[in-house]
Image 1: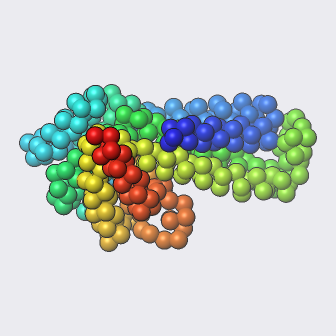
Image 2: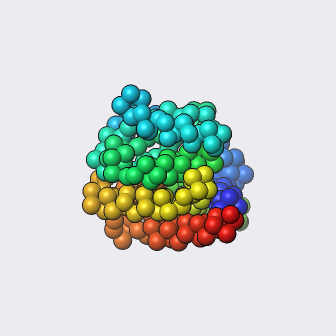
Length: 290
């Protein structure tokens, strides 16, 4: 169900991009919007992992120092039929983890040292299974594509804002583009980016549910992931990361940003309560399946 929901949301995001492109510049505008999104996707696809790892001070893990980390990931990748990702350690005091990379063959998993210290062996395995599930499900590609399309929509909306100031765009003035009405352009400039963000966040939350489910089935211990999420969430509340953004916060297993009404309203993650409820259902299904 989460896969179908993601497909529908990505389709809606693409239609929104094409729609705003056509509204601003007709068929040519729609073509430009698609090309612009493609260029952004290409750049994000190839370089986002290096940027994210550098942003959070990630250093490649030493196997002699983090032998349990390596052993756990090797066991899980064998079980999940995945290539071994590069392993990193994050420069942050709070427990958290994320996966990145353009595909399973070029992927990386990063964890904070505190996560490896404060969680039990089973809980660490559950967290790593969650991150590997993101890699297996190609969620990083989906998330970066959604972010790129949303970014393209924001840029086009910025163009619409200028169009509102100067009386509309030139070129083909089809009726379905709203003519040169500055009020229509201004409304478009405000509402289109907001709609894109809402859809992008819905995609992010859908992929988190899927990764939770995949991890629970891979380890066959949903309770371990529940315990890990509770501990990591508590750590994030006590010591949130201040220099992060919603676009990068979506990568982490738990939102590392400081809680506020605005952050909760536009959260990249489902609430802890909903994730636990979903995992408890999976636990019941696993028990009944046995």
